[in-house]
Image 1: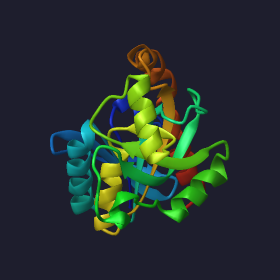
Image 2: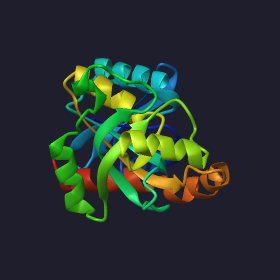
Image 3: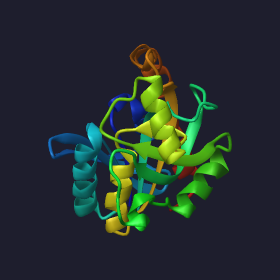
Image 4: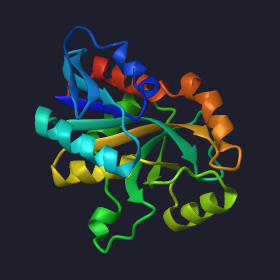
Length: 217
């Protein structure tokens, strides 16, 4: 069983298009989910949460209900590394909460599933591998962007990946996050976000769906 999540419906439509047949539709914690097949893999798709608390809550509920071997989080993110550009796709190699400082170094930088990284790269090699930072703020200033980048050296920032990674780590579930950059995390971030969301956000989940069509996990 593989769970695929996103924050917004727009971010998971790339996988929904390949979910055939659909075996079940339902709700979990008042959020919609669909269970079906992509290739020969049984998959659950779910979305509808914002911030680390909701992300962790949903991840635990999905793990408790479906007992997945793999958990993949897809969607959009803001650039931190000044070299990164809108439209680039990042696969996380470690997951860092930039707004909390853990004394447990093992939990401070959680590593992804090597299997998932290899399978994703096999179907789409135009991917940048690097850290993803998460926190409960919408980064929209040059100063905040520089501060987080200096502290984490993360490629991108979001509000969810590190929280889900921590839950998966604690439950021995293999995890990775695949994100596309839709804004630059500067003062015009909200304009960029609105302009690019529908156009770019579905790509990571479409890549994951292609991977599941090709590989049995």
